[in-house]
Amino acid sequence: MKTNQIGLDRMKSQQLADKLNSLLSNYQLFYINARGFHWNITGEKFFELHGKFEELYNDALVKIDEIAERILTLGYTPLHTFSDYTEHSAIAEAKNIADARPAVEAVVGGFQTLLEVEREILVLSDEAGDEGTNAQMSDYIREQEKLVWMYNAFLK
Image (cartoon, rainbow, N blue to C red; front, side):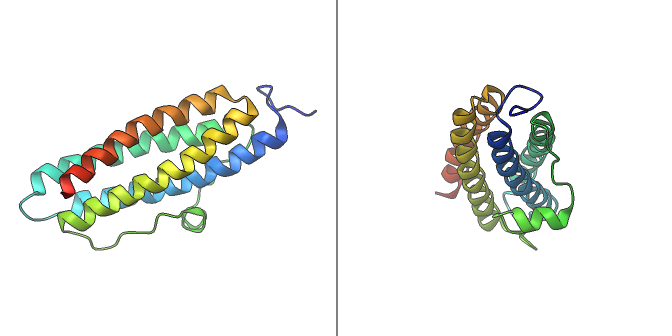
């Protein structure tokens, strides 16, 4: 059979699942970094950023689940070990960051990486006729572009 359980081409679905696993891996590192920033932030912007970082990791946790479930919907297995995540992520671990500027710079850099992968998925999902993944990526991109603007405004 040339199509998967939802009627999409198997080969194109495999490409999508692979790229979604890359996104999943990047999101896991983004999540863990945001969690660390939330715990470790200090200084005059503590109250503002402590809450913002909590919003980021809570949102990332929801998206991680959605991405993994989309991979399953396509008929494939989501990555699920930390070693897989670190191997497939372009986002690096951010260790011992307690100052506002480097933490926010890491958040912006993380979003830029996520956006790059999401745009690649958007192209693949369009080519595969996969409206479900396409809509998911469009929603993520719209939200994150605004957040990049907002966090960059903080850095000025």
